[in-house]
Length: 340
Image (cartoon, rainbow, N blue to C red; front, side, top):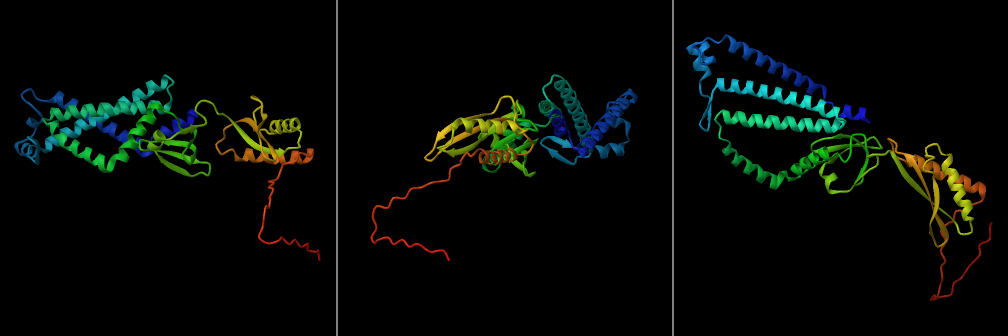
């Protein structure tokens, strides 16, 4: 299962390619900045002193204003270099923290979540510091935040709820990739845990995309949270004239003969209830949960019970109903039809 988790949390190939390119460009920017700082003349006060007057005018030409900050080509170049450096630091933080946390035995999925969360925090703090250093007034973003809050209240509330639920699921990890779960009317194997939704592959090989809020607002059954063994049972009805000890011994012997039934704990047959015309037995047994459903095992046991009861003469009852006629408006006429 650990191997499966590592495969699922691994990024797609295009993401890895883009990250490598980004790291390469960030490293190149750092090297060029170091070389430029080393060869900068003593009398120069900045990079613009290395270029001519015409180039300086182009680089300092005001494209537009953001508050009191003039956005110029040199401003955009500095911003791009800063974002590249910030992305490099964030990516290195994620990689280093992922390795460190994974070495503690926390698991690949939880390590990935913690590393991703730390990298987002680093990137957010760095972006805030950069905007403040550029002279932008972040208080003006309060209007944008208020507008976004109104949008969340009206139309984005389900999306935000799913994202928050996804964060809760990734931190608490009530189930992992590869676990067999039941949520609502969906049963299957968890193949991906995302920020907004979770992918569940059903036993019919269908992938159901379940919103994460479903897992925080409904009961979830995890069959393999810490133990792959599960106890199942089948219901068997026998006639009231049957020998109860014979029925119990036969049911236990049938379960022991099936290869998918675990010998420990041993299977057992119990009298669950006394019906109107039958004794109701439960055959309880332990098995290992499979990638597919357990209907094949239940079907095999039912077939074995029918064959064994037929050999031993144990009768399985049919529904019997007694009809009592108290009064009728006209006499009943019963005719016997002769066979032709």
